[in-house]
Image (cartoon, rainbow, N blue to C red):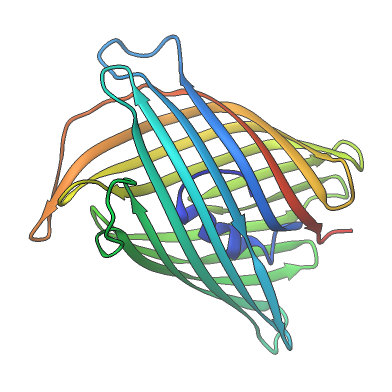
Amino acid sequence: MKYHISAFLLCMQVLTSTAQPFFDLFTLHNQWSKPSIDGANDSADINTSIFETSLTIPIKIRKDVLAISPSYSSASLKPDYADRINFQSMMLSLAFIKQWKNEKYKTSFVFISRSNKDPEIKSINESLQWGGAIVQSIKKTEKLKYKFGLYYNSEFFGPFILPLAGIDWNINERLNLFGLLPGSMNLEYKLSKKVHLGFAFRSITNSYRQALNTFIRINDNHLKLFVDFYMFKKHVFTLEAGHSVLRKYKPGIRINGETSYIDFDVNDGYLIKIAYAFRFRLDE
């Protein structure tokens, strides 16, 4: 899958891996964002740099699958008015994908444990978050599947609950539409055997622990074009370019179950990403 520092999206990667037309065993990427020239004067310009790597290990259990997915990411934010801000995230997710006797139905159960924090914070207990998801897949035809479910995570700003809805549609032999909203949606076109291109939407919600009870909440949406180069059968190099939409970085504090934020506006920006994946196509 394509993108970002959010464990929500990494969770979506595990959940959609049984429905999308490919499965990434290992991923490695860097992404950069630069503010748009036409940003609002009363908003902050922030340059970002993000590195991420993830591994997904599937274990077949009869007709079912257990997927173990560790990941690590680091992010650097440089506001135009302040010093650089750094974050890091370590996550372990466990997904059990149950294939029922009626092969139309498949259910994914996911448990997530992660640490999101400023690297200066040494205590893991201060930065731990717990969450999970359940997603039901319904096979309408061999080329069309629907998905729906529920996601939960104990964010630093409070409990975060989202309904999920998705699709996996092999429109024809060249065109695929797949994703799980609100996290992601992808339109992939096979230009040739070695070059695939398309359009991707990403939505990110995440939070990182800072000093004491403070945190920063990240809400971001990305619209991107991508090109996948299948240089070898399972080795894929990706180039993405696009723009963020309705980006918000919100410093806050939570005390006695009450969350308050500092008013803070940031400009949207251009995005570029380069990535590598060790990928298995499921539609070949």
